[in-house]
Image (cartoon, rainbow over all chains, first blue to last red; front, side, top):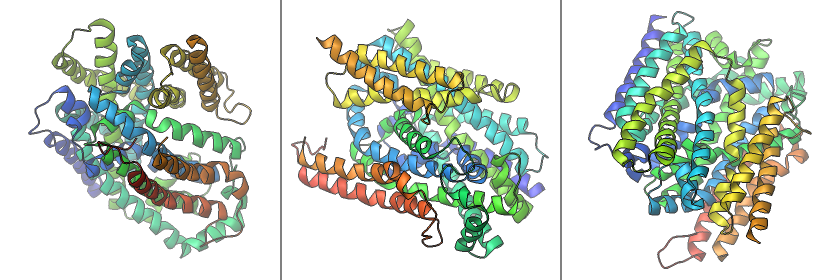
Length: 469
Length: 73
């Protein structure tokens, strides 16, 4: 077990140092800190985007869904792919506008396009409220993985605290570049873990992949087609959820903002072409979940299926390796999330709302301070109220999706107006929020956020057209 | 709309048609292809084909949309 612990903590500390080292020769100003000086080539952009997309959810959630829900998990394989297709059409144009007008964040774009500081502040606040539960989930996932991987010898609080401090420090010193560099460690470990386990376990227990599916088809055929083992997730739910999540994907403030860090619009476009290949490891994660459902059925918590199966199959030092991979897989998205939440608060809420005269240096100092504040808030939630924010996270995804009409109409429809976007945004958020909180998700078989998004689009278009006359 | 953009958009619609709107039609296990249930085989095929579709879109855009500054919109 000591080897496992050594690997876990060794990797966490190494990641922290790589993150700090990444910023060593960089003169830190707001441009360098938030968007890496807009100098990232295709490799750094790929690492960065992959870094934010593959979170702890990939490890635990995707295998957990395949295990406990079956076919509805396939949506995870699809929505990312479609999001990259959308990004091919949207991001290059957005990048050019960002470059031309020196934009750093998503609210910057709203302020610039609709000439409205209050719309920008609203977008920033919705963004921060959506990010905090996401960040908390990363910290909790990290604690959970390390605890299970160390067989309970490390309390999750200790792992959370250590990674919390290191992540704070490297975000503070190196900004976005730090996160991109740590992504190298993260991607290497994670891909290795997924390939070893995903290719390994079906072979170990069944001798071949087709044999595994053969047994699964024979024993539980309904598990492999919609709605699988989750009756309310029928094919219409899956379709509306795929649409919603693929439209919302690049609307997360941190994913949106990362697009500005590219060196050119061509880098963004080429990145969109190769990104779908990155979805393939998810298939391997499904294999783990499917193998687990046959080999260790009846787990109460499906999210444990990946770790339990590894524990049953591999030597204990390998669990250390998985624990380490899981820990960095939480640290990188956490770093990017906190970086953008802090910039939104300092630049788009404080500066735009209270101190329009603040110069970049002041905003930058405040952003760095906010890193510590936002991380601490998420830490408190993760340690003391682990279950309170789960609902907020669902609400968060449905919330950021509502930015889609504002962004896309903003880029491609000259007439789209501030009043329209503002009314649509409020209509979408309120609809999704009311449906979810009153327990009406799914609504008529459709994802509640999707219902909100349709209403949002209709309101944005009609208010824009009516006010025009 | 420029010709290249039009073709790119048509190509970009393919993954949405196959991976969203076609799902009710392919929601079945048989025939099993390469050991995979049909639905999973279908999804995987189109996920793997998407980068190639986007690459064709990219090439067409560059060929057909030539603006003064070399940017494609």
